Length: 227
Image (cartoon, rainbow, N blue to C red; front, side, top):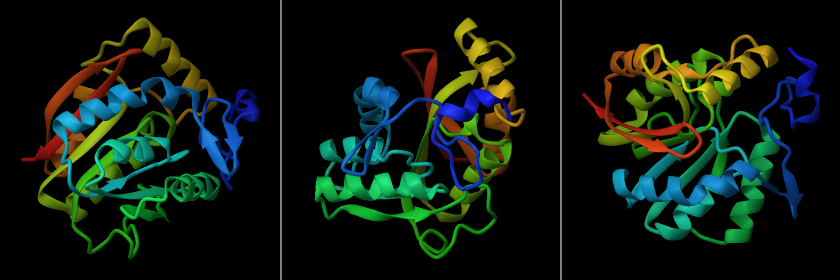
């Protein structure tokens, strides 16, 4: 793993869980990228995902996305999760500051695991949300995300996936540079190709892309529903 990772917050295994410096205030972590994209991500979520019911977020990070979305959609029951205890501490600090009952205690959850534990398995969620995760994690996380969605989402449940993607073998110049940078940091990381990698694994788990929305900075929001 590259020494380029030394400046970033790392999990218990020593691997970075964020690729940007984060400000900390009263236990809450602040992500600069979330500050830039949270409004448009929220608006696309509101247009294409359930606006009431239960949502499980995979890889909540600082917790800001879920806090921001539920501030506008208070009928959502939002469950945070992350594999990193430090990130979960930030989530809990944001939850305490928000003081809203419709926010569930964060789950320590590794999306690549075959069993997500009692807080998720055996439950029925109306949606799953995952932002900026699958490119800074091994491909097993993306595979596990769809497999887990197949187990816990209601028949009408949807998945919301946000981040950078390649498109059928092509990639924007910015995403191509980002992909090389990610692979220098960890050979298992990288910008995933939507058509060649992500859609096939989604289909194997019983999902299809219902909506693809172009976002700023060469990102996409992809909404999946069951086949």
